[in-house]
Image (cartoon, rainbow, N blue to C red; front, side, top):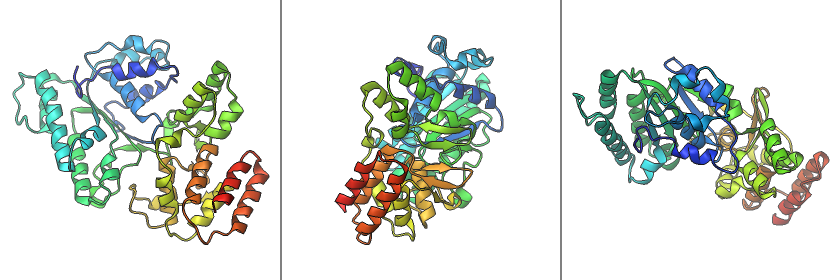
Length: 409
């Protein structure tokens, strides 16, 4: 087993040995069903701390050749499915965390060079006797390995979008990165599954929509993967019974994301912390300052500020998600800002009604903090009082939040 080639099951083992592990192995049932099909390219985008890396580690543990993972899946959903033994530990897996390579590099060019050399080092050590056409080229070397072994690869890429989040203005670097991924993955006989995770959906770049072979499952439409986005009502209720916690309280604090087929989805990071500590508080947003939210809601787009106040008051707002270009800088309208906030997890989205809303108390407090720090001079005290009154008609559980907003302004 290597670091990137067939990395083994250690990270997944750590997850299931934790105090709380919620079985999401049903995802493997889906990935098994699309192996070596036109749907073998999967891009999953979710907010931070919504289990993306855990899912990637699970896939690596299940598919990676050279490790024995059967016992790790005892008692889990996938173990009972007919496909379980068919693909268990049968593939050469490449597991790549793009953030890891980027953090060790001073440019995207250097990052891609480091990635290529790192993976080639392990491939050539695993298969030293193959006659290679050019063992300096990653895609060509993977093709040569496949031709020799007839064993396809599964490629798992975590934090796929980090280049777009850290090199926001460098279009050339972004295009070079997309070209690298296209060359590595698209229309390659040696690929049986490509699974990418990130916060943002795949970047739309005109002719550089280089990854248009991917099926995308995002916070606006997760499709058949909706139950794997966060914790479902049933999963959260089971944890509450096990640990003697109040489901009603957790629902108020952490529920609120809605998808077709899953009308109640909880923030998993916060639920785990609240269940273990016995205290409901703002946990998810402590992994990142509210400064990012403040920047976006402070943008000078017509109607944005009034709509933010309306959502703080518990209302829903119409949104057109179609114009969003899937990056964090090309924002031309209120709709683009609201769509970005959906992908970042700050807003829930009703796909059928095409409306956005603040999903729960934890996120509402974040909006209050961001508005209080924004210096909206034109937001009158009367308007804030109106927000407080309208919201209080729905629930009296957040009077302190509205009072805080009034006090700060």
